[in-house]
Image 1 (tube, rainbow, N blue to C red):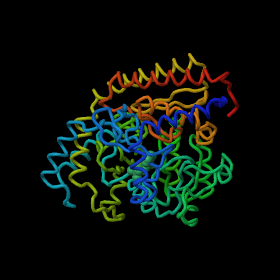
Image 2 (cartoon, rainbow, N blue to C red):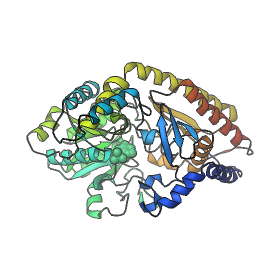
Image 3 (spheres, rainbow, N blue to C red):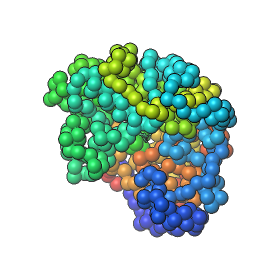
Length: 462
Ligand SMILES: Cc1ncc(COP(=O)(O)O)c(C=O)c1O
């Protein structure tokens, strides 16, 4: 059952959008000027959000300020990056020290060793390399799986986003008419500019559907290099793996001579100190990290088993990049891993999560919303449907208007959630306080009350 739209929802959204624009005249001015200098007026196409992009001036701790001087509790975290919060003293010190000593040599520096050792300790994979974005990390993972096995096909999950390189730009947010049947999804290009010849090399299966992976491997016996997956789906709200799914997937792939790569770009340090691998106890052949590991600086990491990384070490696959493991990124990542993302910090985040989940669950019950909350580690989201979602098709059945209305309402109420609300999650940082969470959950209660007052709220099939 999804939450049915009451008649008043469209007017509620229109009113919230008017308020949003009234509060941000300087953002509107910059957005208009930017259209003459930046393609589309922004620096990445996903910054084009309704009703207008929000231009920011600064961040400190758990807070952000826009160019109009409005202050927000930041739960956007720059799409899941800001686990350290903003300008964390340990990260600032590390960056300041490194800037004074040079930011780029294209030669290794000792911090890289400390970062690799800490990643190995947390994630249980012995050998690491670095890159600069999640896209690069998953691209290297796909190249590695193909290079090691000498096979061309890969498997990915419908609705998982792994960055914007060709092999994974497949069935990320497919249209209903291109999706194909649920038990054998079609491979649909996720963007223009992706050659069909490449899309055809990526087989698509549903999340939590072991049988579909089994069928794909059997149909293409001896031709599949491996599978890449977000072990907890975090580009479709939050969808958890069913018990045993990931371990069975790994065994199945290995039985077919194929490899398993976890894309932990989002879950990495945010689902817990050792990401989804740590939470589920499943160690894959390759783990991709990015976003939060740099404490706000661009960095990515690729970890592998001894067998996988021997292929890199002996030159079987050349994993390269001018800025890979640059001293600035390594200094920030070392501070993030060794000083910021500590056990104590995770305990504090666990308490904030319990506070948020409790208050939101009560608000949903009090106002009879057809919704539930899903939260893992520092991340969470409200799903505007009663039942848990187990795959991308279930996610599609949720009406995105609710998340947009909630996003606007929070924004106008001083809480900055990530735009594209239905697909995204909140992020609590190590610098958030119970007072920050209180502002967020008070807004949730007011939002729920507003919906309830729109008229009789009914469930509809979905
Ligand atoms: C799961 C996942 N993988 C990969 C990426 C790509 O990372 P980046 O934007 O740093 O290239 C993202 C970005 O949101 C992501 O969510």
